[in-house]
Length: 542
Image (tube, rainbow, N blue to C red; front, side, top):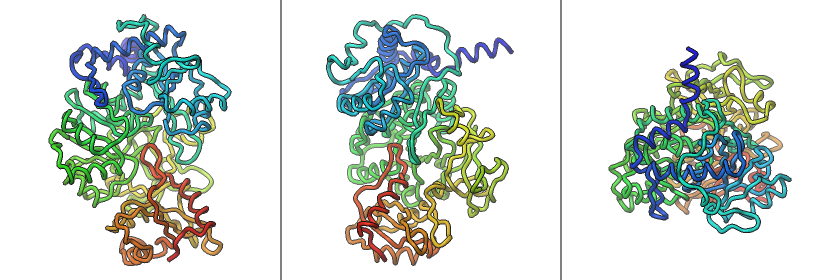
């Protein structure tokens, strides 16, 4: 058993898996960048990775040092992700949408030795460094020349060749390889330290549920800096499986469909709004999508009417995933679950234990205190995901203790479940609206609103009221400009799917809604906006 433990811990790493593919599929495509019409084989990708790994080592970085990236999806992101692991370091992608103050928090938290960014984010980076009172030892810009403050990516790697870097120690499955940050839907983001074993088993999770293998060609249209972007048919599982990944810097529906046809893409990943845009364009243009084996959406529930449309217009193989930054995807709706179970978050993944437990005001429920599996009793979703979760936050024991309990993460999401363990997310505990003593969950109201033919999208929150406590308020993007608040009110009154006390009393028509980069609706931001709009008399009362 000692031999097994030693060999397992030394070799069952993500970087070992990537190197197997370099040896096995060296001349097969690994990465395609349509913007520059460039394709890397596995051998060519590994050669560029080696140059960057040697640059890190030559710069004095050692095992465990953090390399932060503020990048859109691009080849340099993939190179850094792999090179950091090869050099025994830790890649830490952050959102390119961060403000200077938000980025300064991430810099203070991770204290990266290197920060790699795009030229258009330079001002944000420099302001963040001043605010953080910490400066990484090296600032690297990928798309601009070197100057007195920054080094260009090309200059940084130019002195080194593509041979394998020097031996700097054995790999280990428990080494930290990637540090992600939670999306901050409820407040300040937290660092999530992923181990190499987490990376491997996250890859296996995707390969199991989608039967992904070396002949696949994938495109994840969502930003790679979050868990769903990196691990959900993103660079992590694609390159571990020996498949090829197509780079989509910024989502464009027509380009996505054109690339799907040109490169014979087999899997496309995007939030529900992405699939909606793809369906709109596909109905107009009619691209050849015969290569597609599946489309995966995440971040929001997939409604029945939308599901049926996507299956008809895009692909019969639609997947919807639910999970967290800490645990990856933990439930799926598979093609054979649809459209009958649309609207739910699906049932648990093979290796995950997902439960809905009772909610107490002053303590966590025990993992065994589950609510009834009747589709009506409401509780909190808890997840045990030993394969994909590090079970801690970086240097943050307080938040670790608050979030984890008895091998489960307590998500803060409220839901129901049925006898087949299909979970239906109703919202977050913090997003719950309490009106006249009744608990109202925004997601449930949004689901009914979205069935109105004249509604394109919506979000629901509560605004303060002296009599009721809170009043249900809906922000709506019209699909038909003739839609009025009175018409929506009648639609909601007539709906058999929602109790009358849950219907909105205030409306506002808008062009955009607050989503975060992972495609999740950020209700706390809407709540702040709604309170301000109420004070300014901008809400329509019905």
